[in-house]
Length: 75
Image (cartoon, rainbow, N blue to C red; front, top):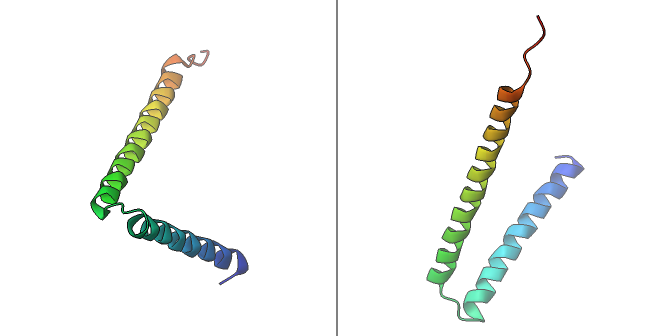
């Protein structure tokens, strides 16, 4: 594995472990229930899907309007 790939994998692993530590501290130190964390995760996923869907709809509208408003080539 080359150096950039190792750095990428290392960054992903550190990020995953950091997120796990954050969740563990939230449950253990601050008394946040795992059910509440799951609810927040599901709400976040829903918002992400909504934003992706709106961006896709805007892109389709933009492409459609460009094709519709494009001048026809001269004869």
